[in-house]
Image (cartoon, rainbow, N blue to C red; front, top):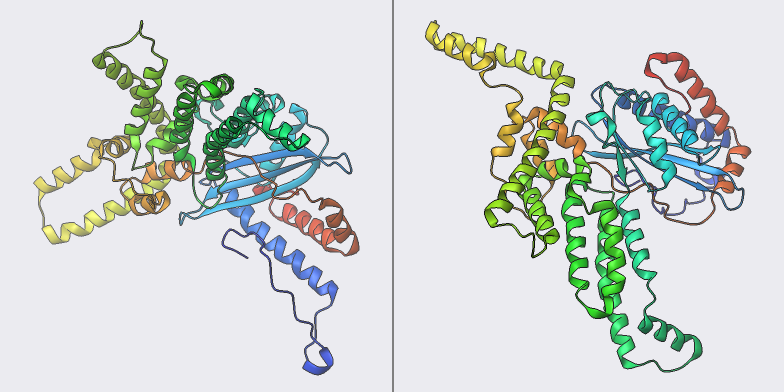
Length: 473
């Protein structure tokens, strides 16, 4: 097993002759019981953690139809960062579903959330199918969250990899004479024009950017949410450059329209994209402001150009609005973790009481200490203090989780925000192989008692921990 709990290729087991070695191998029944017991034990630990009121998860899901059985399947994956700032990705359900209809999808997702006792779901990443939009709108109204940010307007995270795919597909719809010439040359065994190869090389160069971005956001070994903003603006700049090349202007024009549909309006981007950028101490508000300025400049015509002062004033107002909305999110965290903060404050009071024995009886000093602790420095200024600190120098090997782990004592509430925001997922569950494995799994479960043991074990867990909300969903 690797650190991310994915199964890796293993060396084949060595055959053991019991008569020669004296080793008594366990029976297949004992092995099946051990497997099911191990699963149930790990499931119970995970369920206990997910059900904690301080645990926040991001969900990704995907649905598809089996080509051999024509059965609909859905997989749910939970993403979270633990108390030691380690990333986790756990498949919490893989099951057949009745249909791809929005109501059915919503109900199945809710069953999974409630079944695991999950109290706080921050976001959910799905592809851009219309049924998913409706499903999540229905789901938001029934979530067990005590309070969801901005009434769930930013709950739906659109799959970035899927959007990139749509943009590229839109461009490839444009029939390019030179590409067709090379394709026909291969098909009919003839020599294409030299210029045809040059254009094809250009297309490969043009699409390389999209390939690199897709590979970047498909990484599951590190947080990526703080990269989204700068990556989509890099795509925007890339499209604008290639739109000036005559051979590509028509193709790129179609791609720009698709880009603008999802990412072209700064006031329609998901708030979490801005928040995650600001919570990157190497970028903070500076990158958000730079992006706003570039977007405004791109959209200005010669007739509606602004002076630098007016442009900068507009950017400041836009940034102020984002920071204000971030303050609203901060307030929800402050309320939610008020008990934790109070405990820390109690520890601080005890430490100050122990200091009195050192400084002696000093009423003046007591007044000063009481004034400082009575609220003259409010908790909500913690976010302001973080925002006002200069951003740290960017390096290619910067680890955002390590930085926040180290600085969490200085910014306890903001660090909790960062723990959640930087893990927002950009893509749904990706299948690495097209090989049909469902039949093999069914055969395995039918050949032994593992499935039965697991079902019985889950039923016992449910009966024992009703308050935890465990179920096989």
